[in-house]
Length: 96
Image 1 (cartoon, one colour):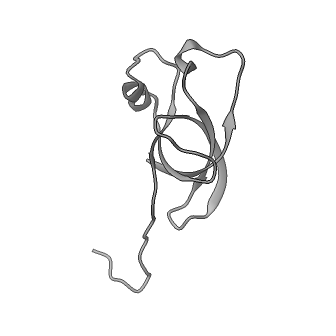
Image 2: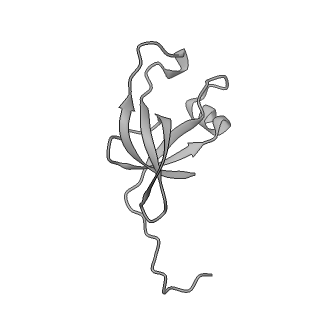
């Protein structure tokens, strides 16, 4: 799973029918501490995410196709959740 910040929306006049009625969002991957790393993905929104929100994505085609319930859809990346908070913990805490 991948964390990211939604940076924008993708609009197209001609696209594969699997994308009909689906929103495509431009997402910048982030590290667990919230830093953007500049590696962008275009992902289908399976949840109501918007620009500026931190999201949880899957970047694996079979999982994405299962979520949209279409085994032949040309979909690889999909947003599956909106993140409310990320708590990495302090570096002083012992790891188990």
